Image 1: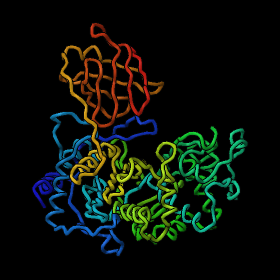
Image 2: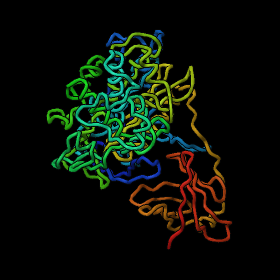
Image 3: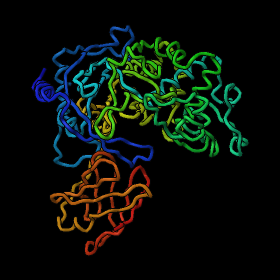
Length: 528
């Protein structure tokens, strides 16, 4: 290994899980972050291989890959490991190493697979499954969270292709064990599979918390009805179907029940038969809980206190929405199969017309199971996944490049974003623009006008502090972020695309602040 890797292995393995680092997680609003202390160490287990060459599938961009040596690939890996950068930058901002960022963010383990020129160029594991010094390798299993959804969507499209389902039919015509509850919205517009897969059906329940080991786990019908022991409200339609994008894990739970009713098979068995086995995703399963024999090669999640989750990974009976276990390499196989069919080349599950439907963006840039962005010839698709203690992301472009990054720490989203930025820079992904802001110089004495507590909502207070001439923001129970000045009253973060505007003329203390994020304004008022 190169110097960076050797330094990481030597320093972190010596500590073997006692380094304390900070981590956080996203919620559905995109604003909330929760901090978590993890024990982490970084080890080096890797494969560097052309998996597609082993599987006999043609390169996804239809071209013969240029001959690349192992030394070439290792050089790319080392530059990726040494080139981490946040999504939002500014002139003169230094790069960071993966080792340093894992230490700073307290992420316990990471697994990465990189797709280049239509093949899996390398896959490598870093860190630990938990604080017991078990190394993560390319075959280590992670919970995929919402990346479960596009794989489930492929099974739906396969049944549509076989003539067993209609994307635009009333789903209640297929459901047998449960029905979408009728109300004034469904009386006017029936819910369809197309709407459920594209998060436009008006269904409730954004996501699911899962169930701790040893606690009662509801049946799927209990989840749909929102009755104990389910920890979610009932899944219903509360707005007109087909009109607006609103992310809904509840909608995918309806899809899960529909597939069971139509085929008469358990969902995990059905997905293995229709998608996983044909695509060679041999390390992937929708079995919940994971069988005991597999736990030894699975990453373990961590709580906000830095301890492993009591009893191990949460159990998710909402399989289609959040229940998949997998590896970056298997997700790369899934992406490459989609790229093949998208370009008109054969793939084992779906035809080109079916994949074109799947990858045609609708409301919210969401296709049927995947987010689709940009325009030809640089279109790309992907999805993020967040379960308790697991955060992951996958991206693939029609040029034949992409990456999958999976973590077992609740601050994994920050790390995933920085790794993706480094991969995109090294492999020169087209149409991948990193936003840069202009860093302003302001009088440090002004910062004290901004410090204090601001109430964002009934349960969340933002604490703004001045630490050594630098401004920081920390929300209730969440991670602390540095705020960088772009004017004497506007500040930005680098971890996510947000601007904080303080309402002050500079001569009096700010009484209000507004957070601008994702096209929305979130206002907070100073409190004593």
